[in-house]
Amino acid sequence: MQVLLTILFSILILVALVLIVALFVSKSYSLDRSITINKPKSEVFDYISYLKNQDYFNKWVMADPHMKKDFRGTDGQVGFVYLWDGNKKAGKGEQQIKAIVPGQRLDVEIRFIKPFEGIAQTAIVTETLTEQQTKVNWSMSSSMKYPMNIALLIGIDKMLGKDLQDSLNNLKGILEANQKA
Image 1 (cartoon, one colour):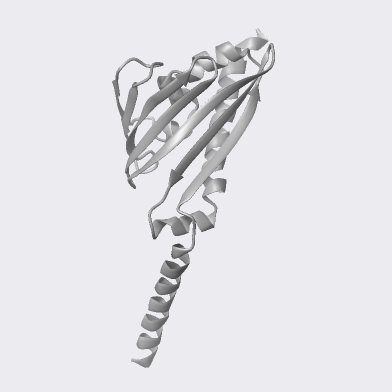
Image 2 (cartoon, rainbow, N blue to C red):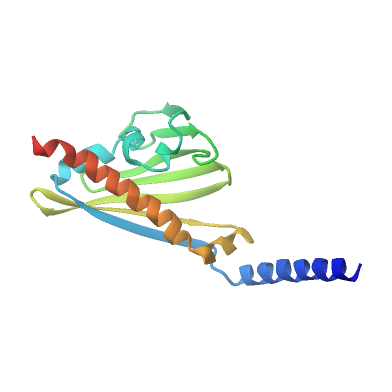
């Protein structure tokens, strides 16, 4: 009986410690990744400004090839909504184009429903490096409610950042694939 009480007390202390630490951990996060693509800026931006193209390069969208998708509005224009309902990896939610600066910036709000509710703001910005080279920067910012914010201590930047970079690598592969003809 004493051993059981000791184990129970230890678990309670551990849970309390986690909850206390979470009080002092930031609730917001942001991450940025970038890549250089050997294509003109206009061609790169034209491709990324259509959310349906994420089916081919976005690691999170590609997590479930059988996910249900629905769309509202005109892709590539402010207000377009891309809804998805997928497996445990892909989850359920929607993303909406909030703003477009033609040839330069695409702002998208992502509203997650499953496995966790949340809202993230993303921006994909293109910058001309040379006539045939474009830098693409993809940023994401969001927040996590207490006590889930404790997850920020385990390196959400590394986990989400890796997926973001993988997606940019996929984008580069797609856009550069046709130039070696």
